[in-house]
Image (cartoon, rainbow, N blue to C red; front, side):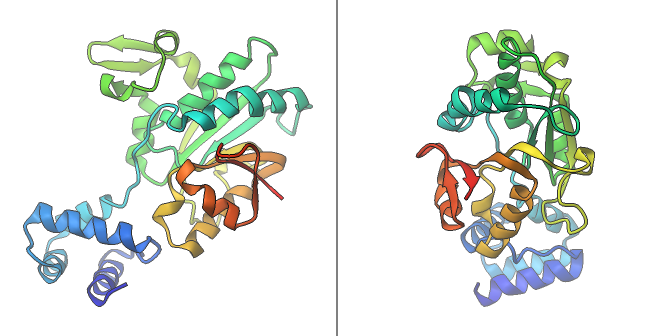
Length: 272
């Protein structure tokens, strides 16, 4: 981390009590470069002075660290393996737990597409063997959670969905699609910070005990020591034979932490 970057980290920490030192250096520097260009600040020093004086720019800068990009069925292979292999195995071996339900935690759900995607898959399996399930979908951003709860997506966001799924689970209203209540009924959305030291899992879930945890396209934004903290918190809440789903780009990180990939290239893991 160069001296100017560290000065910006120290300034933000002093003025907002927000620690940006956890972010991976390339991501951090790209965020600064984007704001330098957007504000015509000309240099790092000029942007530092703007952050020092301008409260609104500090707010915008911090917002740039909100990782909220998502898609329906974003990693096609992972969702295919979940649908054809993982969910059938969980359902076949399900003997009931404390709440007699299959439990999923989407640990960085952004605008909600990930949670709705897994819900669509689970609902399809209900036709063969009825069971209860709940999906706990969390994000550190209250704005993202509000968007996810509404479940309203512009036509441009529906590209990964089949026509059958769109017709079955959404109502079209001009240029937007609205998630139907039947798909929302088993999803609990809430704000949760993965670095929260008080809770190991969303309080709404009471005790964790998840059959599947999905934490995809998040780890690579953080330095290795913070990746480990996220991994430890999320995987400690998984049942003995449960599964952890990440993204294709993060597979090597999981392998480095000695996790076992269930099917090669699937980005779905179990702890050894």
